[in-house]
Length: 244
Length: 327
Image 1 (cartoon, helix red, strand yellow):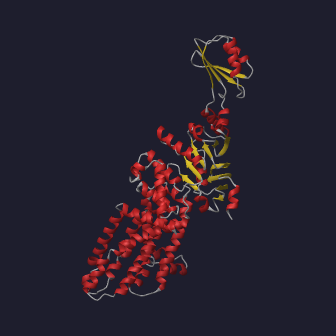
Image 2 (tube, chains in turn cyan, blue; image 1 turned 90 degrees about the vertical axis):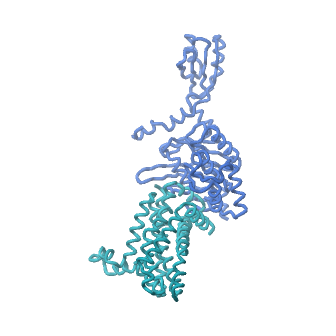
Image 3 (cartoon, chains in turn brown, blue; image 1 turned 180 degrees about the vertical axis):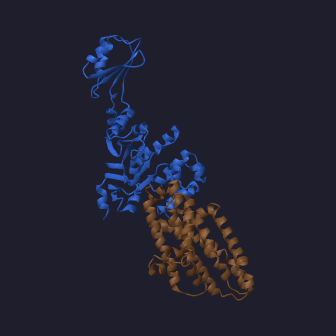
C-alpha cells in the first residue's frame, strides 16, 4: 500500500526531524544500560546471558513508549491536520496501520541500538545467542503491544498529556495482570473464567516465557492479536472522534 | 463500468443533506449542485453550517441525513474514488507545521499515489502555481498566514482535480494576496467545478458564477450574484445630487412618477434617493422629470444594489427571532 508507506515515512521522518527521536534513544540506551549493569548485576551473576537486560524492558517501555505514541493522533486532532489527512484518498485503517508501523519501526531502531550489550556478553563468555535473538524478538513484540495501546488512546483526546497518562495506566494494568494488584480488583465478584482470562493477559508472563528461551507460539500470537485488537479500536476511535 | 453513473451527475451533488451534533442540528436540509466550469460561492453568516456542509462534501464528516456525490461517486459508499476527484482546502488551511513546504507537498503527492518523477514535477508545478518558490524549504510553522493559506491551496490543486472545494480560501489575506488567489481560482474555473465558502460578499461578485446562501442550516438563496443584487431594495434606485439644495417640491414630484415607491432624503442636504417599487427601472422617468423641471443636477446615479443589505435580510436576526432564538 503506497499510502500506508507514505504515512509511515512521514511519521518516522517526523520523529527524527524533532528532538523526540534523539531524546528517546539516548534515555532508552542509558537507562537500559544502567538497569542491566547496576540493578540487574550483569557482571556479578557470572552468567553469559542477557536476562538482567531484558527483565527491565517491560518497566522501561511502560513510561517511554506512551511518550512515543501520545502524539500520533492527538496532535492531528489538535492542529486540525486530521481533516487534511482524512480527506486524502486513504482509509482510516491504512492510516492507523501507517502510524503504528512508523512508531514500531522507531522502537525497533532503538532496540537494535542496544547491540553493545550483546557484544559485551559475547566478549565475556559463550552466550546463548538463539535465546538472545528470541528475547529481542519478544521485546519487539511487546513494544508493539504498548504502542498499539498508546496509539489507540491518543485517538481519543487532543491533549497529549492525557494520552500519555492514560496509556501509562492501561499498560500498567496489562503489565501487572496476574499480580495481586490487578487481580484483587476482580477477586470476589468476577467468575473464575474471567479472573483466569485477566491473569493470562499479563505482558510480564508472556514476555518472561519468551526470554527464557521457551518457544511457544501462543506468546507471539498473544502479542500479535493484542496489537490487532487495539488497532481495530484505534480505527473506531478515529472515526468517532472526528466530529468533535 | 462504474463511471456510467458518474457521467450523469453534476460534479458535486448534495441532496437533502443534514448533520446533527447531539441535540443540535447544524445542517438541517440542504440540496444543491455544482457543475463543471462553474464557481459556486457558498455564503452564510458564521455558524450557519457552511464548514459542516463542506466537511461532509469532502468526506470528513458522515452526514446524519441525505447524500453527497462527488465526481458521481457516493462519498459515503465510495469514499476513495470520490476523494481522488477532489481537492479540498479545509478551514484554516491546516498543514503539518514542522515540515518544510516541499516536504509537505511531497508527502501529499505520495498520498496521491505519484511515483518519483511525476511526484517531483507535480510538486514543482504546485509550488509555482501557488507562488511558493521563495519559501519552499522553510518549515510551514515559520510562514506568514498568507503563505500558509497558499500552502493549503497548493496541496489542494497538486493532483489537478476536476473538483475543488475550498473553505474560506482568502480568509486572513491582505488585498494583494486576495487578488492573487482570486485570479488563480478564476484561471482554474474553466475546466473545474469549484465550490468556495466565504463570508466576504465582494468575493461573490469578483469570482462566482452562482451563489447560494445558507442560514440556520437551511438553503435561503440559489442564483446568480446578479439575481442576488436584484433582491436589494436599492436595486435600480436612483441617487440624485443637486447643485445647491434640493428643490422643495422635488420629493413630491418624484413620488408621482410611475414605479417610484419611496423617496428618501439622505443626510446630505443636496441629495435624494429615489427607490423603485419591485426593483423596476425608473431612471428614464426620473431623468425626463429632471429635464422637464430643469433641475440643476450634479450627479444622477443608478444603484446596482447592496449585497450586504440583501445578505442581512436573508440571514438576519428576524429569522432567528421567528424561531425563538436570541438574535
